[in-house]
Length: 101
Image 1: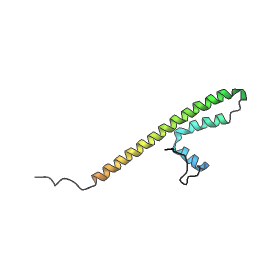
Image 2: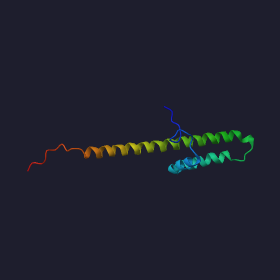
Image 3: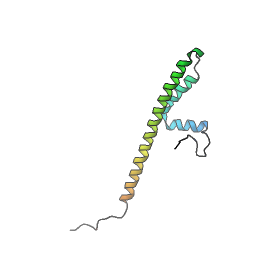
Image 4: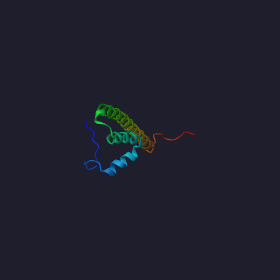
């Protein structure tokens, strides 16, 4: 199963949607800034190997940050689902026939 980053209507995210998503995941902001700094770097073409290493390092950092964020979100969703299930179970019919005096 391949996951893709798209808006609800399967079109690529707009700039506003990208900014909104980054607001929801502030832990990714610093890594994205690093990518942009590399893209805007005013370096000599002879530094291409270092640029490639930098991109690989930032890619690895982004992968780790993204996975951590995704896992945390999945965990929160699972915990919420369990809480809801427990509440539904508690609000069901009681099995007890009452207390004996």
